[in-house]
Length: 324
Image 1 (spheres, rainbow, N blue to C red):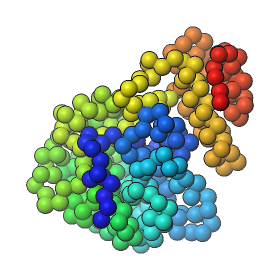
Image 2: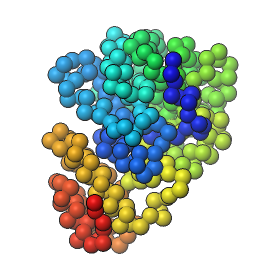
Image 3: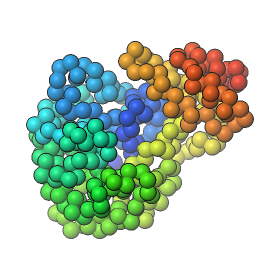
């Protein structure tokens, strides 16, 4: 079996999947300016992909450019019988791996028996992994999860997952109950790395939570022994995050704004008439920082509805911005 996880140099740096954030437009920008070792798609409903009408709408979330490889398709769902079929689809679409979301705390997701709800139902979680592997062919199957539901059960949960031999495990170092209301507990990652040595099967082990720079990620790897780190929120407004040579704080604001406009144009290219332009506005809040007049230009951008309006707004304040 070809396993992209085992081909990557450690520490492995990964872009986290975030709904309505890490779509192909943003990932393409990230791949150009600061490519991580692995990209993830936004999570996509396995149940939805198994219905013809829903599939037509959902496949846009599996769009990607060749520059994003290696790229993992992330699925969520609560019905094991649907995962083999979806894994076959992911294989046909040319992805480098499949990830199963077992950590999302969204109540609508949990009502389906999916996301973090699977932490409370390890037998079904195991069945989902087995079914995914059946349809995955040569693609490696990984799991992104949390360290527990209402309390830390990470050690027990680790062994239950390893029984069905996933290629990689990504642990968000908080429980479902904690959401993001407490600091991520990286001491648990160190314990899990010690615990995994007792297993006959050794998946790649990735930590996630409260890491906002590449330097912080590398430090966490040194402290815990993890194979890598997945970074999410730190990527907002900073497609250079994984870049070893360039840091956002050293990049002229004009260049940052040029990249923001490039991102906007890609969003229109892929999602015009499909997704609301409001999706881009959460990015503008992050891009527009660190210069005089921030509040005014940010307020104007919040009223835009197209890339042309964004360009006109930016050029009013920064006439030297260069656009291709």
